[in-house]
Image 1 (cartoon, rainbow, N blue to C red):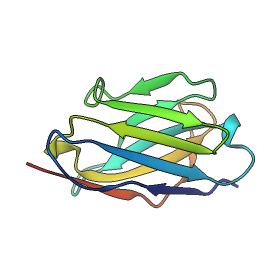
Image 2 (image 1 turned 120 degrees about the vertical axis):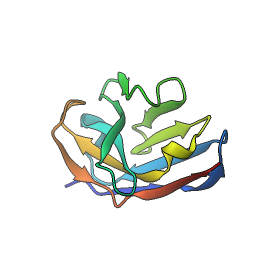
Image 3 (image 1 turned 180 degrees about the horizontal axis):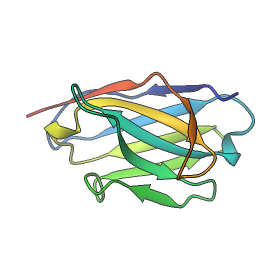
Image 4 (image 1 turned 180 degrees about the vertical axis):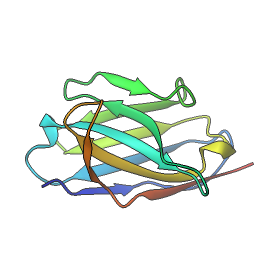
Length: 118
């Protein structure tokens, strides 16, 4: 079992930055790929970024160059640094753990709200 708890969301002006954290319980964190997804009101959940066990990263085109995913296996934590935020980044951001960056993702956190004002 892996339990995930996100933090770091909030309200920020367009152009600002936020760093999301996802703390994982369990001893298998380092063996898991981790990812961030987001869901805006009235829209389907979409992939944001993923990081493999070895640190290889993948990003959605919409966030490439602005967001950075990283992980600290000693702290069982994955981060999402979000810079140059846009109003269209407003969503609930959830972290997830899976076997590979391609999935399946079988553990999910409760999500944290990110709101970007124009």
